[in-house]
Image 1 (cartoon, rainbow, N blue to C red):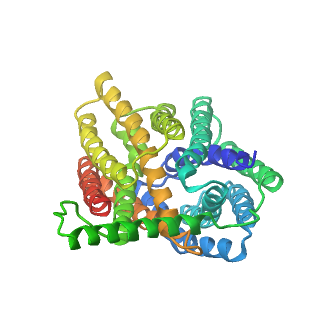
Image 2: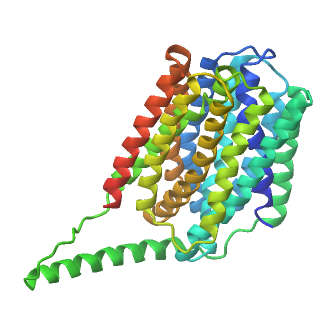
Image 3: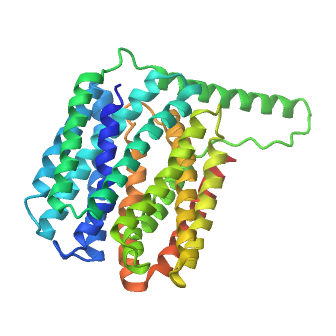
Length: 398
């Protein structure tokens, strides 16, 4: 039951993920693609230092529930304020503040899951969480589809999102509890270090005994892992930030059908999380490098949708979105689990910082590139950066 609040919160943000870009560029506010890029980039970059701060504070105080409640309560109030103005500058500032308090629940959530399960069950536990919240996200997208098709006002939609976060706050206040002890992450790091030491000793003894050692012995590169996470996030943001506008204007799809496209993406994610939840092991570093390569190929495949709008190109776009969501599930669970092993206590927010660094840059580059050079460049550049992240993860996984 303690995950109910996160489920409700994701419902609201699933709806907002597509509603906000369409709202900003719609007739009510009258913004542009560049405004969307500035808003999203400012919000993501503002959240970066706070991702580290929230992670440090929750581990320092051991009061994980407190930061979850701060996040949900603040978002409730800020979304209500969002309904009171259509000034683009104020909306950008409000959205940035929402992003800052939004990340307050991320590090404590990850710690609560990691400390509630042994290391061998982390992938299943994170996948179960992501599956539940992704279902909430899909329901939010379905709500957006229904509300937009029925002509509900922007104010009504924003108020609904505010109420959903209020419900998330209340349920978390009732059901979330801080762990009595936090030692599982320390044990996982110790086990990883011992395994590495054992491999090194075995390698050295075999060499001293005159055996021909064909295996390579190489220390894991934390830098390569971090670079891979940043590049993967950068490519994802460049591609996905302007994508709602591409579907709306480039492919001339109705706003309600734009929600359908992202429901397909989230549906693919749900399938991925369901499979991970029922698997014993998903491959770690080897998995994420393959997924980065697949995402790069899928971004290239979207170029077909630029030719002309037809049933075939719409089918290609839907297929790409489903597979994008499916493989992203494996990437997220792998990187999240590895980060909980590699990062010491007090540094749980660094993973969100890495994602934020790539996301903030990509959120600005994607819309600017789309507005000035067209979506062909968006698809090509995002594909190239996905391939760079593949190379970084390949170095880490060797």
